Image (cartoon, rainbow, N blue to C red):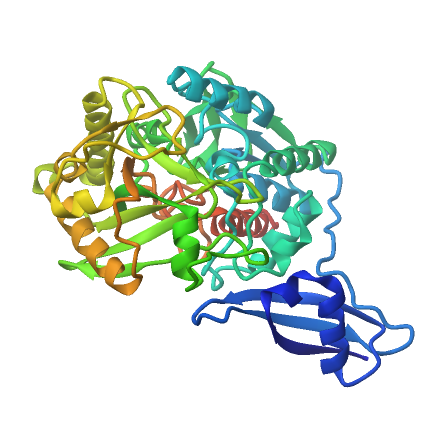
Length: 520
């Protein structure tokens, strides 16, 4: 017989197999032949930290607890007459390609950037030389922005699909099975490249194609239906449908779509800064202990959200034990983001701290149609770049100084490799954003004693929280509302907000295409 039991144990017991086994045997109330943890979360609301565990036990003499996932069998589609062009090899594109294969459709994946190994070299050069390769950076290349932004897999997007499907496929391609268990699963930017290569190999082994350094510049449209794409070298690639999964930073794609008459609309987003604390300080605050997390607990996370003058102010993409990176994707852009390795062992913690922006908030951008928010963000990124003496050396200000509108006479050490300089971030940011951030930080400081401190610094600019444009599509078929065969997917199309939700969206598009290709 197999049944589930619930445990609430100390961090030490949770981290010590022998002690945990004793606890399982004592609570099960029966002879235990086999057991596995199926869910795990940290309850840090009080000083005595508790680990919540759901444990599946097998009590029959021959019973065992089955694995947490069942591998998917992918067929050979090399000879399939059904073909789909997938533009972008981020989470939406790669998982769309896997789902196409499962459904017997051959995917042709086009990625403007490089494979993940070459991309690693370009990112190292970016940090060393402070120059961005516009086709190979933290945003563009195999795996998309998710490869080098930590691999956080928590999502609230459960109405559109099953997150476990995505997590199981990641495990099948090399991720640790713990991502199926933890309430806030995480892979790490050190392990994600290998997983991306494994996914690519599955696509190729099954007869699909993955082409790097292949930028799609134009849709091929005949009689209101997309038939393929034209690439930057003039090549034409045809398919029964096109999944547009370019990610939120491929701004040239939006402008090319507008040129081709594709309907789009401006979408709200959020802009702010990357906030970096010493990790030891976040551990003390979140675990209610001057000694910090101790031996058994992971690096602490936080999540803050409030309202300030009618707009949301919130933490975004929190990276415990992480680093701040230069995340621009083109010349004359200063953009920062955060990432962490699987061990989360850095001495710093960082997160985006952003303010919700809506179309109409900046009157000077009214009348720009679908590009209202895109133009606003581009101008802010260029402003920060220019004020940084045309470089990706980033402006920074101590947190309390920012709130009080003071100069920071010096800056503490930081994880940001291209370097920092002292700046008045409260003046560099538009007042609409700066004022609300200051208000939000005061509120967060009241909720968490010690959070509002000059030990923390603001680094700018955090501006790639989501797409500034939405490409409208039919709610049922997921096809573009005007162009048959075009399936906008993932973050770049305005329909996702992270690795898992983007992957789910790509898979949904593949399924919809499969249905549309069934003869009537």
